Length: 187
Image 1 (cartoon, rainbow, N blue to C red):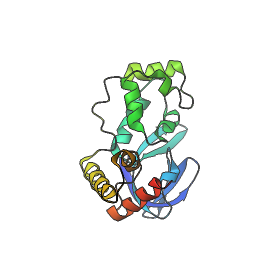
Image 2: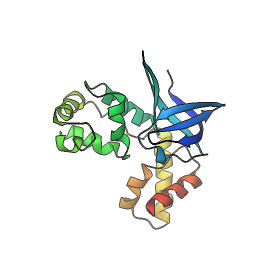
Image 3: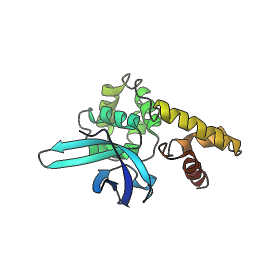
């Protein structure tokens, strides 16, 4: 079982990345491969799906996103492939809020999640998500605060900064994080 793999992105595909670690290229399924940049180094938190006919890796930018993923796939009828689109927007906190508020309609906006499955997600996970701080390990929280103060210093408003910070890879140097954040702000 793997916790994370650190390496350089060698290629991007429509639903996966190839992460090179010491000459071994790991094919990792991710929600949004365009979050990553080819040739850059990343730490990708992984879940390994091992079955008789499958050996797949699913990747996440933070350990808390991985923890949330593990909670989601514990729901009856919700497997790893169906769960990945929920992470594509980078707004996992909104999904957690929808579960806590029993917002079935919000959950049904995601592919292959109908009313029955959305109700099952709420039934199984409501009240069990407080222990997950999405994207907020101590190091990540410190890095996010540092990035936030830099962007505020550059004249951006906090309401514009918060959604962007969640999409920036916290394992990069602060200079690279600022560059990535500015690129996202200008989109």
